[in-house]
Structure formats: structure tokens, C-alpha cells
View 1 (cartoon, rainbow, N blue to C red):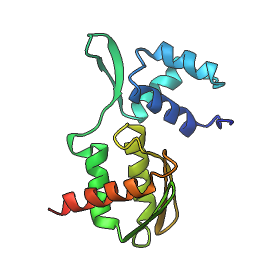
View 2: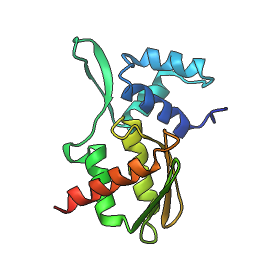
View 3: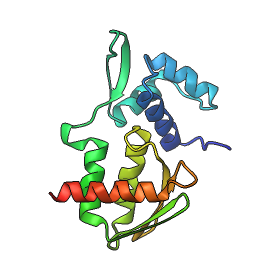
View 4: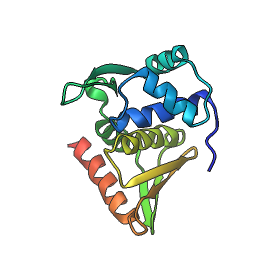
Length: 162
């Protein structure tokens, strides 16, 4: 599988590395990107980190690392809960696929929140989504995981309505 050498792809790779807790310096990011086929400078990486909201901090051992700065109210699971509560019209599942129906225009917003929660490890059962105008296809990491994902998403919608 080939990764496109675009700014968006580069920034997504950086976000994934940061979410895994494995990034400690800009030089490390430059090296990893170059090993992945990207031609970048440290200045480019610095701009990327700023654009994706990465901040430098310390891990539990006191070593420097990067993390994505999220506002307190913008935690991935709480955002998914709010959006599901507001947008979910219907849920159907089969095998490893769950289909979510939303009002027109709502699918991409919901899919994006689900993808972010998945990448953050908050909903690891979801490996990805595809969104249309009013439909989101959610792909489960388990061959028979669609029903569990459907139940999880329904429970998130109900917990936000309380």
C-alpha cells in the first residue's frame, strides 16, 4: 500500500505517531518522515506541529514528548457522544460493517469524529469510516464486531441525552 506524499498525509502520520506517545523531538519526526519517503525540513515539521495543535510536554517519566493539545470539552469520545446524540437517525449492522444514517449533511461530521476517536484509541474497535451525505459506513476491527459497535454508538447517543 502506498501513502500519498501530501501535506495532509504527512500531518496524519505525525498525529498517529504522537497519539502513540512515541515522538520526543522534531528531529525524530524529520527522520521518520524521510524514512517514509517525505522530503521535509525541520521548519516544515515545526509548521506541521503548530497546524495540528501539537504541544511539547513531558511523559510520566519526565522525558520530553509531544501531544495533541485538545480543549477540555473536545475529548474525542465526548464529541462523538454529542454528535451521535444530535445526528443519529438509524443504525444497522452486518458482519464487520455498521451503517449509520444521519440527516443530510451530517455524515461527514460524524465520520470525522469517529475517525479521530479511533486514532486516539478511544474507540479502537473502529478501524475507519466512509461518509456520504447522510450515511456513514463504519468498519469494525473484528469480523463480527458490527453489532458491538452499533450497541456502543447507541449507548453513547443515549448517555448524551440524559
